[in-house]
Image (cartoon, rainbow, N blue to C red; front, top):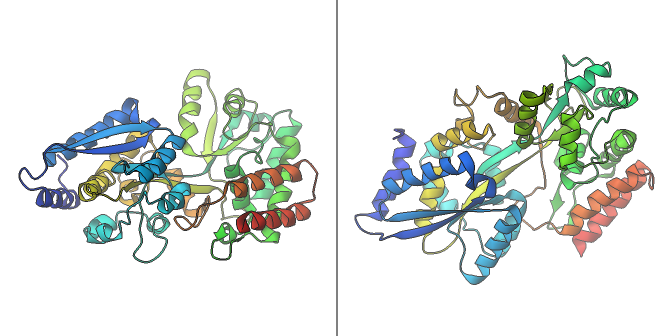
Length: 419
């Protein structure tokens, strides 16, 4: 039993509204990401469930793992049919869509009723992501990431790159890419294939405050000068990329077999690289993504969240949601997965700060740019993402200059939003 003031307050509140025999076999549906419903992650989720059920007799939590698309489609369908899961996970990028269909409860009142100690545990910027306007809050930020740059040290050393100090700026990074290419290896994946990699490169040299959408004006916030610099990076990298996207298995294979120097992505690929280091002697590390100037850094960030559905089980659903996101549970979760999460108090736990990947992720989040802000305000149309990748690819292929591509991109994005 974990004896903390905050945990005791949460469970005591649960006991108050439940009362003796008040709930008879009340069943809550709990939907999680498929990765969290298997192996050691599932075992730990089951521990959380067992602890909560023991403190709340008569409550039964039924966990169900779903893929990303299935989570969203199931929540949308559930909102229409009145069969929503009581507690569920999803990503910030689909938050507005879930608000529009009525899948998310506004939990502002429940949040403000929690002890200050509980509310102070969370990263303030993460909470702001869940709070589009005063007295509206739709989620508790959960696991997340700050993008980092994996470096294949063998490839870099063979290309004559000094690996003792990571590149501090885009210019230094590009110089190292050129050396890798001249040595006959690939520098980076094709950063134009996936929306997140386009966003990632914008975060290196673009204005991070001008990335996103003004939903009232139905216009992109992106400005020509920032996007011109970004488009020029795609041109500069074109002769040196692997032709695979950041998400392809082929990219990981190239990195593991010492054919690829850099892979900018989230912490989820580290288990693969760590295993390769153990099995085949892969030499790699992970560092912050370089920025436009020394002392700044690029990269993107985002969060998965936990939320609850409106409906008759809302009160006990909130208690369970607040329990699994409390510091002690999130510290255990972080230690198991070696993954960053939005509970800042958990990230400061001594056993958590002993994990290098989490330490680097916490640092990365401080600089990183949100993938697609603002959240919970308006659903981003699919054309917005596809235009971004299509135009980045066209510029990299030489169909436009960087300046022409930036101007055409902004015009097409605004047309997409107006439609």
